[in-house]
Image 1 (tube, one colour):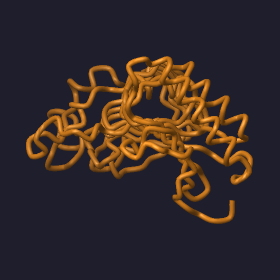
Image 2: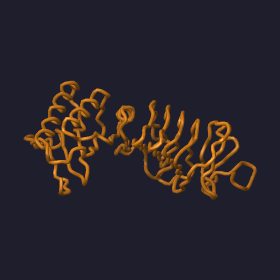
Image 3: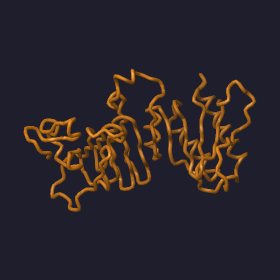
Image 4: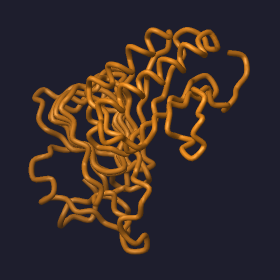
Amino acid sequence: MNRESTKPLSKANTNTSKPYSQVHLKRAGKKLLLILPDTEAKDGNKDWIELLQDLKYCLNHHKGTWTPGTPVHLLVENRLLDSRQFHNIGEALDAAELKLTRVFTSRRQTAITAATAGYSVEQETPKRELFPTDTVTSSNLIEPLYLKTTVRSGVAIRHPGNIIIQGDVNPGGEVIADGDIIVWGHLRGIAHAGAKGNPECCIMALRMQPTQLRIGEAVARPPGDSPEVFEPEVAYLTTKGIRLKSALNFSKTHTFTVKDQGWTQKNTPNPA
């Protein structure tokens, strides 16, 4: 593909009252955007069979207009997709020599299923206003994203709240949260908490050996030497940058100071 375009490559839609009722495939630079209809019919299985047929028709009709191996970003918004449906989409794209790499969704269960299947995920904040914007700004009000999986190399997880992972984050894996990050396993990839600039957020892991840590705007790399004994640790922001400390009783021994925009040890004027 030589030209960048956002012209949709979709099956002809004769129903003008529902312009987004079918599959849409759009060029976006060096990747393709695959957009599924946001609404689901009452007969979910029949709806999925028809949608899958639309997808295969669209791919077959336009096959040859992209380079083999072109990455595809899947936009599903509020549609609920299970592991079987992700498998169906993956097979259809493989047959067209395309590769599904990232999933955008506002549905928690779809995000969990996609991450478990090994795809990078960005869970978008629901567009509807749940609370008045002048009184509620905390990402803690957004339900945490809880994953039971290993975040493999090349996979990125993005969520507008807290992220809890029961599993490892491998080197090359990336976890980005507007809130806190808790890894109930081995953190060896990249973790970015407070991604929208919140310095109060923390990163916790049973075994902390990341390639990079970020909290708010601060960036740090782990110490070069490994501890003799591994224990759960917490990464937190102080006035001197990101620090690591045993997670045991952290909330009892440390407090966040709004004035300093960082954590300090209780009863002492200097950050730990």
